[in-house]
Length: 209
Image (cartoon, rainbow, N blue to C red; front, side, top):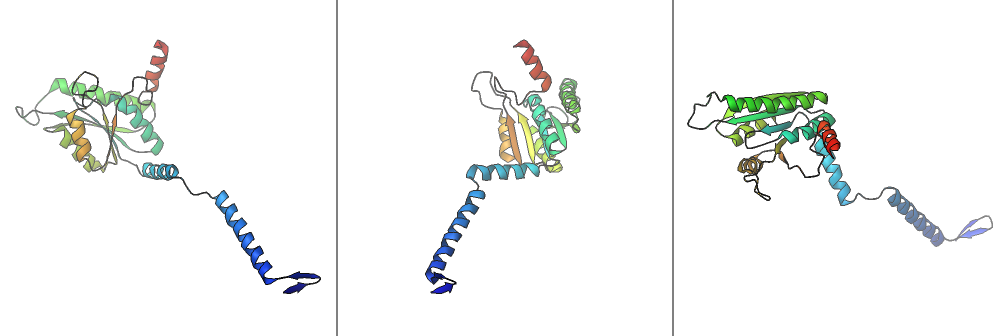
């Protein structure tokens, strides 16, 4: 028993008060600092990985990979993360022709695709590099450039083997995704989607609606 003036306090009472105070304090701390949920942990990890994505975006084109609708998303990512952006067009040269054979029709298509990418990037004040490569294998060309550029992300548009609903994606897209040493983002335009559209496309769609 401990006496303070006229008050008598037992040791047990003091210990009980300390235990109660500690419990209240820990409860208040838990309420002010709740543990992160699983979703919050995933979001935090994704934000951290996205922040590391610097100088590493490649948008790949080929006759079998239509990535024109992916440029808008690539530009948004590059602008937000201050990343360098490379638009790559691969012209696949058949074995019946020399490796450096002139293919004017394919080269014109490549110029048009990369020119459109430059226009979209320029309107959004995003720096972009463009490159056209002739290769025997589209898949290997994309993977080689990704390795050279130390890419963190390869962005591919969708191209289906058939015109019918539910047709499988192009074999080349699946091969690149399977063998890439970095993440691969495949974009499929939704019928009513807006994420993969440029501002001009959105305005045009709104006017015709």
